[in-house]
Length: 288
Length: 210
Image (cartoon, rainbow over all chains, first blue to last red; front, side):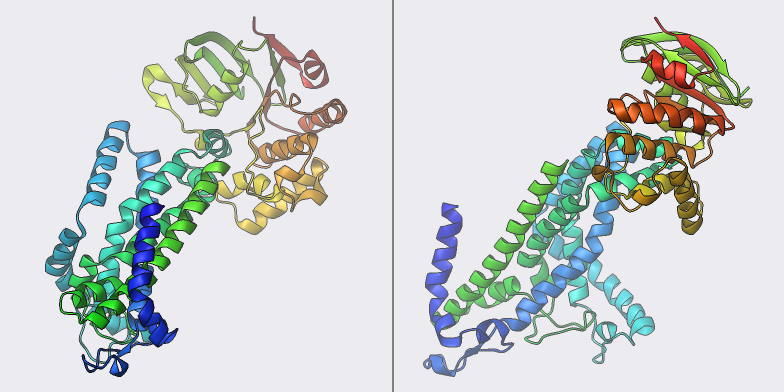
């Protein structure tokens, strides 16, 4: 708590001037122009596009990761033998511990060419849906790629929470479902999935928190462009964390304050999401 | 013959040898004190606990025989259970609880719901369809559990202490209802209980465990 308060206090102290100068438009604005370095009144700074990018990549990540995480959790908890369960849990822990820069490099080197092709195919068939339409014809380092990579990164987090909640599902109800004619999958669907719903929501929010705050993996796989980009296959976007990482090294004193303010916004958003997740996970533990 | 068990059942350290069979239309009451293995019999027949040795068979189909490595999964056994602790699904309405078995057997939703409603009417709960189990009394829950087992039209109905979880007034009502329902049930019924009143009320034959 002390560390959290210290970080929040520091960011507020350093970024306060920015909130005073730009007010709410710092959060809604989509332009990042430092203007004349000598005259701070010429600067136009807003993290709206980056905040949108954070949200859209995190949403893509969650949409992709949740089905995988649920399937993996059910597989580990109810289908595989004990010895294999131990191996799978170790592998998941290992994946969760991988540094995000490793994910980022892998995403850039391996996933990027694949996603580029997938994106072209999606655009070809589903381009009539606005979010899949890419008028520029430039694919590659898109929110879709970054979201997909983030999705893979948060699968272990969501799986771990889901597995814990599913493991506490009442076995006697699963048996009852089987004794009434339910197949194993039918019994899991009737008992375990509804039982673990709130735990899964909590785990998903924990993953969302991680995805919102991810820096290096997004920095390497998303083309930083200051515009609100709804077209998730197009090579343009960014998120707040990667903005900070990109600008930090060469920032002026005033821009540094803006980056601190951006950091504070990100800090509050992820804190809020994680706080909500913790409440939901704890609530689901009490129910079980 | 509808079902027969010749062999040894067991759970943990506990083991018991049994030899009985039940024919269609018959209600076999298995009585005995706590710990005599009554519930283990029900769970073994339902396929929730494997048979230790011997053979469990129904209509010439072997459900469980460890020596020839034959074991039929619970969902493929033509039986239904009313558990001692009922085990109603708390997140489902009464009618959804009853319809579960039919849906699990691939019956279309509309048909499953209408058949469930009919069975709920039979057990006197037609106006309780939308309620959740938590909003029912012990006796009402017991009737839902009974309806849930009957609706799948099993060949073998397994009743595990069906009247133990209800108050005295509900027990009297259920003792009247149960024989009425079982008289129209075509398959074999196995009732395990420690209450001789239940045996007198519904059983056609009894088997005592010591």
